[in-house]
Image (cartoon, rainbow, N blue to C red; front, side):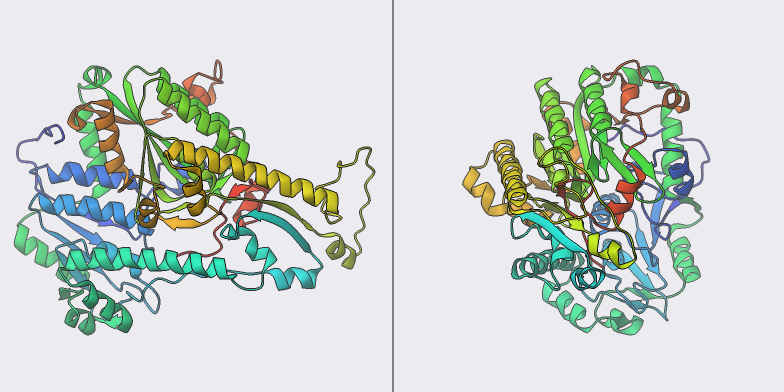
Length: 559
């Protein structure tokens, strides 16, 4: 139970609006440009926290949501569904509406979220595009051959399929097996959740999926939609049931509540135990974290390490939730971060990993040493494997009249030059290095997860798992979102959830962001830095393995 909220006399009852047409951010923007771009886009944590508080606020009469063409991810939908279900459990009416849950296209995730509400509305001209998930893979091998570009990449092992985009013209047997299971597992999550939310048998939901997309009338027949109507009819119905209410966006309500709660509470807050949420979003690399318009946020080992050390040194912080939303990247950077997580645990601070949309390869590497790992059913995780190599562009450049030559003094000085292929000795050295990194990754994963090495290797081999399947094979401990991870962190720290101050680290004001840090342990060292070079970001955006060897470039996505 959260602390009681202060109320004002004669304050109007509120109907909260959850507007998802703008999208949802995983975490607050870092840096001025990112903040401007995300000015009107709410964060997932803001929405979930506000809904949980609203459930206990007598002034909040109900909730209405608008799902548009910008669907949340499956992991975000799962967390929002849980928050809506907690809101409903407080006895408050909820309704979700959309012009169309997918217009001439898939609307799986949008409808997945909608099915958590008491009432689902659909515009008469709209459809329910609950057509089932599809995963697409792109292959450019034939194009590279035509351009005269030779790809030389090694990977460990057959499920580490990131390089297949460049090496193959179609899916390998292992690639197809893995992607098929990912689609099956994620689809199973959607079907199960929809069936529970709509009080239907799973067989009935699967029958609807087999026929979708469904018209509004067909969706009503299949009991996927309760009411057919336009926006004005949705709001008129709610006002008729609730009486006079004032509309308020969920995130604006959250900010207002936070403002009221902080009045005169600064001193009291300093004395409260805290759970720190430390975000690790984006590709992992050495140095400082960064943010750019081209490829979003990145995780620098120096910055994240400083944030974890700041949490260790803060006496008020009793536990840490490491929120991971990363496809991985640098092996050595991931290893440095793993070391910091262990150091934090040795300092007596429990660490709970909370996986968002993706926590794979290097993203899994930094999550696996936590005391407890929480993943969403649709989280992409695992990918315990490694890849490395290069692309030889000599012939492609020669076709446009570009010639390059190099002079070397030592045997392997130009081993990674893109002007020539690896020779036999160089390839053996690369293969040996891949074996060494893979052995280290699997050994540490087995140690961190408390699994026998042979058992760990069975679920490794570069294979990507959904969170639901990862729990079955022992790679994660619990299914849930950030709220569940915070609850676990409180329990492990031996503190009452209602008495805990949940704070994001690092937290620095504008002046602190401008001033240099006094040392590498200072909290200011955890503030956003220059991050990954622009070229590395560009290559990462097109799935080239420049970022690091523990990378899971996803050339397909659920839709």
